Length: 316
Image (tube, rainbow, N blue to C red; front, side, top):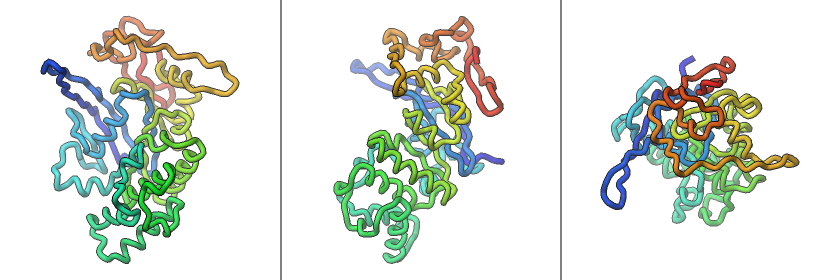
């Protein structure tokens, strides 16, 4: 079966000027390759700065890749022109971490939900209002909320509104960038249940970005673990959490507090070590307790721990 979304050797380099005017290059993505099938949910996990959000921004074309391809339904969308972006963005929508900053405080709920419909060609006011009511009901909210403003809602309700707005164009793919991280645990569960229900009803495809492994396991069929712009491990979410193969994945799991289990602070990263200096080898070399000479000299290829569980580690 052809994947709905395929990412091939995607790279992104940012040029940064310092105070003295000299420029340095930072590689945010170093050859990411992923594929997502229609109706699937793929989780992306990793610490801050690993490239998760950069990947989402490239897919939605808020930025352009330096190298590589993004294939949507057989079409390369990596460098499409501005005129074609409108059609693309109706098929791929994004839900951001902070719903308050992503919703206009000057617009009512009805205006927030109907504005994308105007672009999509929904003509009459009644049609748009009826669809707005339908979208609110999908995310568990009442039609009486149409005249209210974002500041009148709780954080969980605002995130529901963000999800409803993302659904106005009837997208194939939702990019969910830390959609529950700013919410209380009980509210997180409500939002996750809504997302799960919507996926079943509408056959949506999710790319779910998070640092919370438990949340990713709950909502994602598969999980990819990223570190310093590379995918270190990918496989079924249950396998990743119950039987991690990469040393970095194991460190991430050790950092998750568990009731009744003594907490061990993970090793902190040595600030004097710049993993960006590693050109040919594994980005995790300087932090890995099992590193050997070839890890520094040669980038590990994906090895199959199981048929669908791949790990980029010579010890895998």
